[in-house]
Length: 320
Image 1 (tube, rainbow, N blue to C red):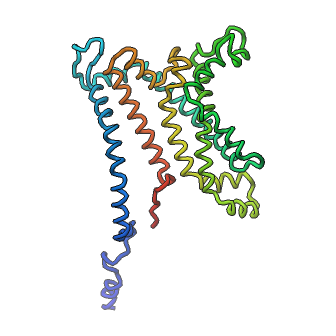
Image 2 (image 1 turned 45 degrees about the vertical axis):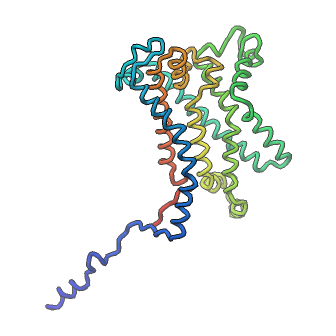
Image 3 (image 1 turned 90 degrees about the vertical axis):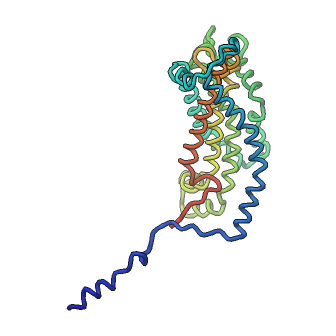
């Protein structure tokens, strides 16, 4: 009986001997480290060029955003700190433009994802004339955005446009806010859906035909094969497509500039920055808007990468 406490004491494993449930990364071999160093050396020239091209403009824009600087009155230039940011963020024009930009971005990207997936499936499994089908689908993306925007403007011009003829006589949708915004969204969807489809088509190459055939043999329906096999395997391509298109749509400029020039509360944040920089010649406020757009784009990219990081190409998933 007296030996029981000692037995209990001996049976307990010392703290350092207990298994630790921690993620342990395997140490890289010398060859792997040399390969990584080589990769950084090969990337270094491109990184240096990118920093030289982008770092100075971004830094100068931030510096201008901290000043009251109107080109019409250059002698009145003055450092005002964050006053320009308070002016922009306290003005309803910024929030109206931001709301319009977010609405166009969300609606256009969502529709493009659905249509792009459908077009990608058609391009992948077209039974007849696959090359002709792919060429026809990609034609809108090959047209310059400004040219495409002018064609949409002509189509909705009363008296001359073929689409305006579908509306009651005298109606001019480009002169009203919401009809004009939906026309801008339509032009965006028509122009950039092929780009989305092209990226998703690349993602379809990740889906094994043998896997789909095995699922079909097991009795899986077409919808089950699409949602439970194809979509999970296409996550990296879907992430890339959504990220690229969201960033591009948030910076929309060409279509709005040609179709409405930002009239009737159809300005995007890029149009608002353009108006202040090149029309009002207010470098301080214009640079402030540019910096805010840059910050918003960075936040969008961060949210996408963090939210879907495990699906991003090249991301390693740690396993216990």
